[in-house]
Image (tube, rainbow over all chains, first blue to last red):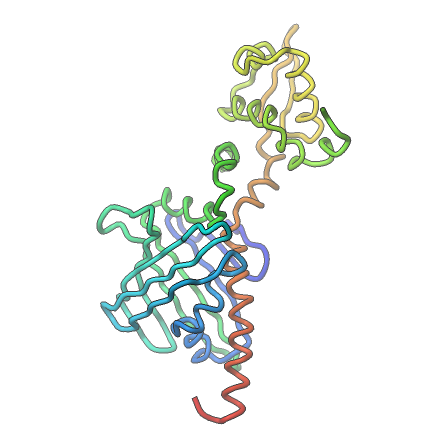
Length: 163
Length: 117
């Protein structure tokens, strides 16, 4: 099932997975660099939805990362995780926890990022292993639309009725 | 008060809180006569009928006659645009990737410029 628009291809390959794919006009070592360098992550991770206030990346197996952004109105959104696997310029496996909705121990969302280069262009694939369909759907439907949430209860029910 | 625009699309139609309440009642998929909605929402019948008319015009509810009763039900398909718009996750990633493009262009230039990492 595809739910994509815009430049990110978002598909739901399995009940508990989200796959995000995007091609970049740059070699993979640069895409990897943009993905893993705090000053650079600072510049893209919040999208158009706020300002990054903190990016910490301890890029080694067992190392931690933490991103904090401030959405308009001062609402803070923070994520953190631990690196499970790092193959420079190729692949990163990390947990991802949304602070404020901590999953029970051991139920962390797992992100698997791969970088594949062809003719100087890089395809980035981010596979989100949510662990369950419920968590997956929460992630997909959240989109970090902070502040709009209150009005979305009905719409969420509608979304469920459309499945 | 209904304005002309309310009937043009489903977003406008559900912008009215009473109409969202009607959809909220119908979201369980059951067909209901107007009287049910009047009772459940505590509104006057003409008011409910007026809102139902708007919802019908954008396809958000479907109606069927059964004997003397008109039965209303939710038509989820018509609300698809709202669902899609809500699913902003992919937009977030599109925004991120678009910003990454800028970063990458800069990195490429830098690399070409000084020939070193």
